[in-house]
Image (tube, rainbow, N blue to C red):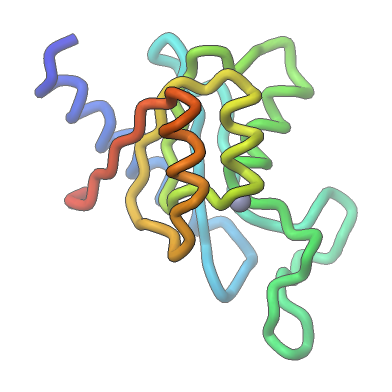
Amino acid sequence: MSKKKQLKYDKAYLRIAREWGKLSHCERKQVGAVIVKDRMIISDGFNGTPTGFENYCEDEEGYTKWYVLHAEANAILKVASSTQSCRDATLYITLSPCRECSKLIHQAGIKRIVYFDKYKDDSGLAFLKKAGVEIEQITDLD
Ligand SMILES: [Zn+2]
């Protein structure tokens, strides 16, 4: 695929991730993710509480509950419960991954990440770079 065409697809998938983020019930931050493999979306996710728990992500003081799952963790776990695998897939995400999620991303076999916003702590990105994951930021989506 040409670089120009790749960028066009990357933007389209990242826009889908952004739409997905809007489905999050979290108030502080809404993050969306899609996982693409062989030019197919094999998973999606947004940050939120686990299945069976109330949808509120923040406690009375406005802090995010510790058991809220991040968008990419939800997307990866969705693949884990299917017959698919993330091996060599690309993750599109609206916010660069945290440390915890970056471990999951690498271990799941994801080879490339395209993100929109940069998370304040970039040690997740540094870890992924070291692990050989290709990382790209796209900031002009519209
Ligand atoms: Zn995370």
